[in-house]
Amino acid sequence: MSLFGFPQPKQWKGKDLPRVLSRLFDVKDGHTLAVAKSHGAYSTISKVLFDRAPFQIINEVMDSGLRGRGGAGFPTGMKWSFVPRGGQKPVYLVINADEGEPGTFKDRMCLMRDPHLLIEGMICTGYALGVRTAYIFVRGEMLPQIQALNHAIKEAYDAGLLGENIAGSRYSLDIYVHRGAGAYICGEETGLINALEGYKGQPRLKPPFPAISGAFAAPTVVNNVETIMAVPWILTHGAKAYRQWGTDKSPGSKLFSISGDIAKPGVYEVPLAMPYMEFFELCGGLTGELLGCIPGGSSAPVLTAEETKKTTMDYESLAAAKSMLGSGAITPFNTTRDPVLILQSIARFYAHESCGQCTPCREGTGYVDRVIDSLVDGHGRDGDAEFIKSLADQYEPMTTICAFGPGAAWPVQSFVTKFKSHFDAYIAKNPKHADKRDLVTVRPGAFW
Ligand SMILES: Cc1cc2nc3c(=O)[nH]c(=O)nc-3n(C[C@H](O)[C@H](O)[C@H](O)COP(=O)(O)O)c2cc1C
Image (cartoon, rainbow, N blue to C red; front, side, top):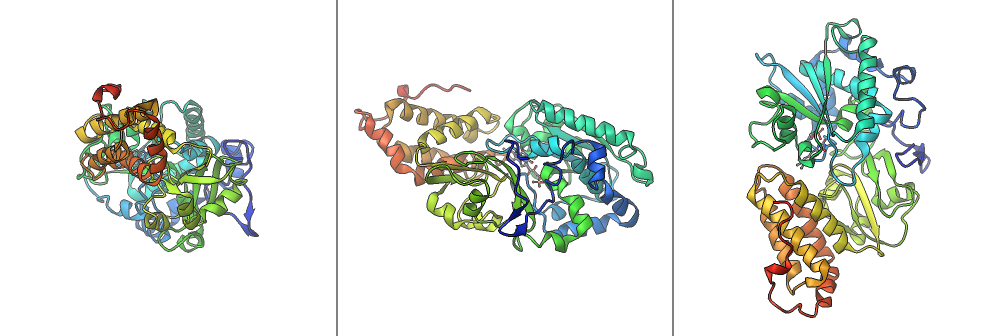
């Protein structure tokens, strides 16, 4: 059952759809230990904790080609291999369940429907990396998810699946749930680590990368919820089986959260590299005529209808289309929508969420937001589209500590370029459009 109550199809075009991550999504009470166990939960840990060496697990995950599902798509096994072994400091595992990107709602679904799969993945990962203490950093507002997690963790402790000597093995792991205070920037891994330590949720300069010096100045692996939930399946079925789906560089399956002008919005698990248009069909079809699509969360550069029709849902295809798969949040919009208003809403979000540390991001996102507002309010001036883009161009090329700046700039640059006629139409409506821009018509900074 998707978050919106639409059941996921079991098959597509005569083939079974993958159920690596969403096996229990449609199962009644699948979040409880009893039901999860009756469907095979925790069967991987006996194979892993007793029969395999940590390096074998890292190698298997590396061979599977699994890539991080938090947005950047970094190869998971490679990230794990950077962690120094046998040092004096503890190694921490931190699960990123902040999920603040507009349009993204897959991780919260995982936490509600199958928290035991995440715990099982954390045990396997923790064993591979020599972790004794792990954290799950959850967005503070996600109260039902936090309750579901706490309940599942308690069940796992009571059943001897967490704590000292898990399932009678020599491996011990403690898991703590940490509630974030609800800022998008706390999803950025170093901002998250700062918040976890009790500081302001503001990113840190890299290097050092968290794998070398992260939480409490110790080696730390930060992984997304979905990434870690794929690990038990890979260790049970093998890297080769995982590669039956997707492409060489984007293997496996992925959860996509789809909303917007689509008949059946929700979370669906499908093989990577499915064409967008086919995916829309699987989700009950588009409502109306496609005008464009945000293919991977609000940071991803928007695609026109023509581009969407040529693109498949994988890292390479989206890179070729100069966009990105990101968190896998897909938002198609039809010809009744106004791209200027869509960008206005996105720009408002980034201006509000900029943490304020870096001048180009803090000032630039606010400036863009105010100029778009002024244009929508009927004060557009000739050259505004170019002006807005030139502002975004200044915080796009990593002139900032973290990738928030580029992520805030990409939608601005792409919307203004690909839907320029819509911006020009607003400008033409202003009888004074040829006047020089008077900064008084730009609403004063709301956030700073
Ligand atoms: C502004 C910003 C917000 C982010 N938000 C999230 C998030 O909510 N969840 C997430 O898993 N990754 C998020 N990321 C990516 C993380 O920094 C990090 O790459 C990820 O958690 C690593 O896990 P993965 O390798 O499993 O994808 C964000 C990055 C940026 C720049």
